[in-house]
Image 1: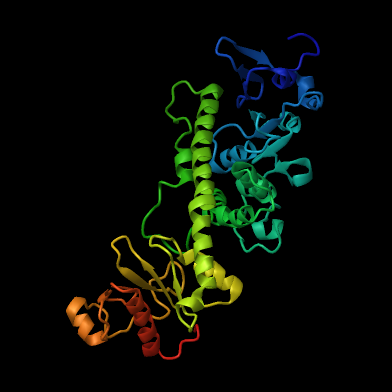
Image 2: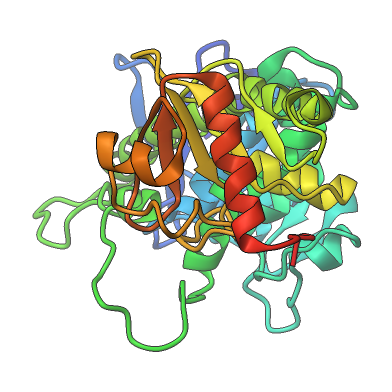
Length: 389
C-alpha cells in the first residue's frame, strides 16, 4: 500500500457503494464493491488513529462485527431513512481505533453520548429507558441501540418516511405508537427482558428478532467469511426495513384514519343519545378500542356502547371493554337477553327488530338503528345508573 494511503479514505472517495468488512482477527480487512474488484489489503495502522477526512461528504455508520442482532440492524435501517445517513457506508468491526473514525456508532464501543453520536447500551453503567432519555414518556424497558436511535431521531425518521413536518400531529402520534408496538419489543428482547413474569405457556419463536437472528451464518458453515456476514447483514436490513415501513404506513394510514373516525364519533355522541354514553361509527370494521381508550384518557369521557352498520346491513352494538384487550365489558348487554336469538329474544326484550345477543353480552344486533340504540339504553337501565366505574 503506498505511503499515506488510507483504506478508510478510499471508502470515503469511492464512487461505487462498497462494503467494508473487518475480520475478527483485526489484522486485515476486505473491501468489496464492484464484483470485478475484490482485494485483500493490510490496514494502515496510521489510518486507524486518523479521523476520517472532513473534506468528503460520505459518512460512515459503525457497528459490531460477528453475529448480528435485530437491534443494531434496525438502528442502521432507521438511520438510513434520514438524508444525512442515506448514503452512509457501514463498517462492522470491534476495533476501537477504527470505530473512532466513524461518524456514528451503534451497539458497540461502550459509550452512550448523543453529542458524539455514540449509541451503545452494553456498558455496566447504562440503565436508560425511554422514560429517562425522554422524561415524561411512560416506557421503562431498558433501551437497546434501536431504542436509543429511535429516542433521538424517531420523529425525524417518521417525518421523512411520510413526507410530513416533524411537528405534524400524525408524526407526534405515530412516535408513541411505533415505539409501543414495534421498537419496545426489540429493546426488551435484546436486553433479555421477559414478556411476562413466571413460566410462559409456550414459546414465541417467530418474532422479528428471531428471524433476524436466523439470517446469521450457520455454525456449520465450512468456509465462514466476513463477506458472507455482510451479505447476511444486508439481508437482515431488507427484512427489518420492510417490516418497519409496513408498521409506519399502517399507523399513518389505516390506524390514523380510524383514530379520526373514533374521535369524531365521540365528539358527536350526544347526537346519538342524550346520555352521551353511546357512540356511532359511520361504518363497520373500524378498529376502535385502542383509539377510544386514548381519547378517553385524554378527555375524561367514558363510553359504554358503540353502534355501527355491518356489511350485511345489520346494526351491531358492542359493549366497550374495561380495557382494549379485555373480554370483560363495562356494561354488558341486558343479562336476560344473553345467548338468545330472533323470536325468543324479541318476545323477552320487546324490541321489534332485535336479532341476537352473544352469551357473554359483549355484542348484539338489530335490523333497525333505533332498536340498536334502544338495546343500549335498556342495558344501561338494567345496570343501574352507570357513571364509568
